[in-house]
Image (cartoon, rainbow, N blue to C red):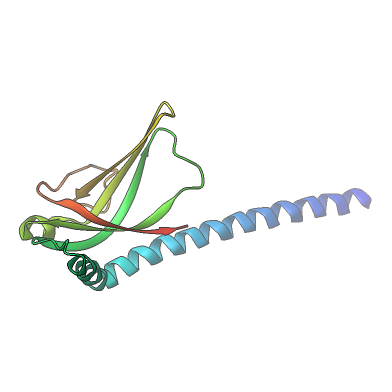
Amino acid sequence: MRRVRLAAAAALLVVALATAAYGQDVLQLVKVFGVGYAVRTFGPQINDFINSMLLSRDAATRQTTKVVPILSVSIGLSAPGSATIGAAQVAGPRAAVQKVEAVAALDANYQGVFQIRALIPVDSLEPWKGLRRVVGVGVSAIIDLKI
């Protein structure tokens, strides 16, 4: 009888831990998709806010701008606990900016000495399938949300 109770308690503990881990994964997914949705929905308002902020500081861009999601792609080992999700404002000629779907953030660590982050405007929401830079467009602002 005692073994059955011990086995049941162990099984309950395993299920509880798995459920807690699953709950955290679900929360992370909600945050990621929530921010992605917010960037898609409120991108024009965020873009206007950034442009107004830059204009008030005499740093306005004369090019077309747009706010898109940042998608991180890590190369090598990344720093634990430092994941962020967010958005970036891109700027460039109107035709090129219209092609931009996201900014790919390539993170690399060189022998623990250099941490490198390259920000590349791309024409796909899946840059890990094929990184295609949109030529003539640059990143003019970053919006990060710590998760």
